[in-house]
Image 1 (spheres, rainbow, N blue to C red):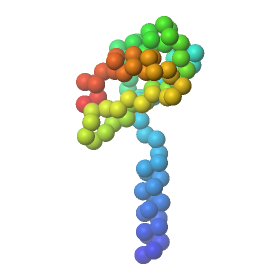
Image 2: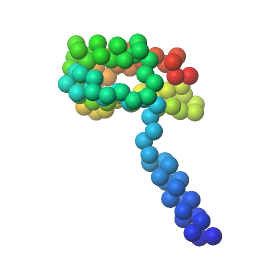
Image 3: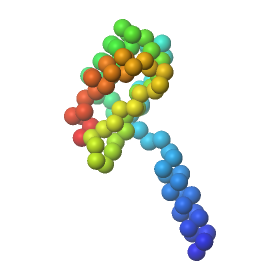
Image 4: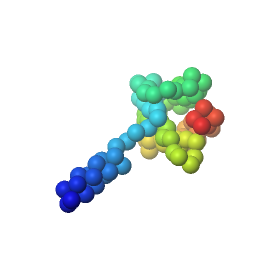
Length: 96
């Protein structure tokens, strides 16, 4: 019984610690390096436009939540003005 609880706790902990975003967009010096997941074309185009005007290095991740439609998480290396621009063009309707 003790082994079962220990193994189930370890599996639960591993499940909670794994990073599982819906999509990931990575930029380096204003250039798109990679994207993973189903990215809306308009959002990808807008992010590339922002990166051309204000070059930055970092990642944009989108997480799904049970109670909220989607959560945008931006890396700390992106300055706050650029973060706000990306959040403004994020299509919340695409992630319901």
